[in-house]
Amino acid sequence: MSQSRTRIGIVAPASRISPELAERACALAERLYPGRVALDVHPQCFLSSGHFAGTDEERASAFLEVANDPSFDAVWFARGGYGAGRIAGQVTNELAPAAREKTYLGYSDMGYMLAGLYSQGCRVAHGPMPADLRRDGGEAAVTRALRWLVERAPQTVELHAERPRAAFNITVLSHILGTEIEPDLSGHVLLLEDVSEHLYRVDRALFHILSHKHMRALKGIRLGRVTDVLPNDPDFGESEEEIVRRLCARFGVSYLGRADIGHDSDNKVVLFGNE
Amino acid sequence: MSQSRTRIGIVAPASRISPELAERACALAERLYPGRVALDVHPQCFLSSGHFAGTDEERASAFLEVANDPSFDAVWFARGGYGAGRIAGQVTNELAPAAREKTYLGYSDMGYMLAGLYSQGCRVAHGPMPADLRRDGGEAAVTRALRWLVERAPQTVELHAERPRAAFNITVLSHILGTEIEPDLSGHVLLLEDVSEHLYRVDRALFHILSHKHMRALKGIRLGRVTDVLPNDPDFGESEEEIVRRLCARFGVSYLGRADIGHDSDNKVVLFGNE
Image 1 (tube, rainbow over the protein chains, first blue to last red):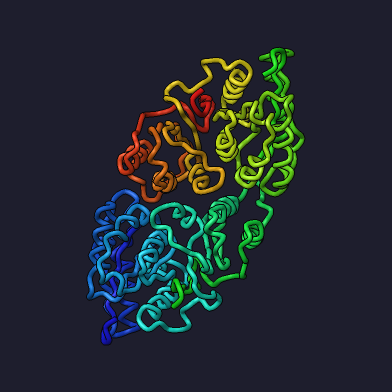
Image 2: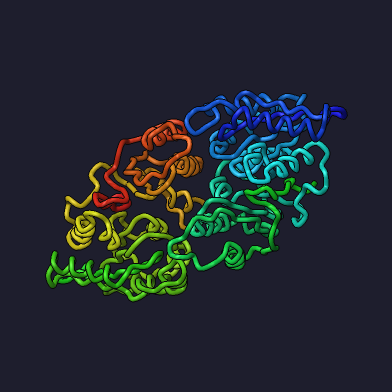
């Protein structure tokens, strides 16, 4: 990381952001760290191709351009949505040495990128993204991300999780297992969160995750927030924490308590691994 | 199968049905085959435990009672919903020899049961269930299932699919891969359908399925209907068939065309395997 000025590249492997949102993020960074941080928003972030911020090729190419450029200290993912899984396998096979010298930050659909990059030995973290500015209180989340990216401020990080650790969206992790980007989480504390799902789907995805024999080598699970839960018909009959406790007991994985992560403005940063 | 009277046991490994619905199914069977078919609706179908037709133990126990009873010719699953995945691994490890002498019919969430039973060498088929009576034109679907169960009437079956074949809901199959009930589908034509999903989720689940290296040993994929599609914001930019064609091309799996299955009254019967 350069001593004087932190250079952060922003790319969007899934859904697009608007130029206005990018400008707000840049203005916030300049207010927090005048002259000390450069947010370099890749124009790919504003492309549009159906659901995505550009075609698979455009998103993959923009990511590799920034990840493989030694002048960047970090890659900050602009937004989740959907689409990272379509490029994560390819791009993590095309990393240059410079890609292993920087930090990657994002969450939600970006779990595909974190998984692939962590499998390749990169330094990755689960935490807020520029698109969180759209939330109520979102400036606090984005400020937290910047304070972590620029100075690793201690109050920005999730404090409960033992090391080594990793954090994922439950639904996204369920879609990563069995694929080439699946990371080795043996011995890890796994922090999980989810959003906008029916509880039966949370149960289904976590059942799927723990049905993989190698996931029983986890050190344990911590549950972040499960928000914007969609109505279950009939009522599911359990809370999200009861679901996780039951499935941990069934599959012989330790349930370690709650974690301070989620699709909200309080979402803390979780650096993967032992650091 | 007994010569005189076909005895069909009905159980509900996922969501419950009402006694009224069960009575309608029985009346329909009696009208179609007076004195020649007995629908034996297990009382477990009417239990209620949160989301489910009874606890995991109650649903597993009812299934095993019927599956392992040599006096039944077939097990007909009452309804999908969610819950079969929570018992499929256990029950398919507890099958008695009689369970391999009968036929199993259902779809949707029952894909978990079909997967586990097919892995164990049982005769399973994807097709309508009693709960389809709730659909517009649902009596035609349930009639089709009965005509198949009782006399294997040729007009009830899906005619496009080459053998060996198997059929699944896309989302359900995505949650089966990597677990103990995953069937060996090498060389199979795989018929797929889905319901009530955003197109980005169809893309995500099928991407996950085809990301499993062993799924590239499929003979090919046929696409049934994808219905009640939820709004995609922004528009996904592809139809469901374009999604399947693109992913098949990407992963080197043959796309063989459409199939006459889906969450609707036209849903034809697909017997798994080479029969």
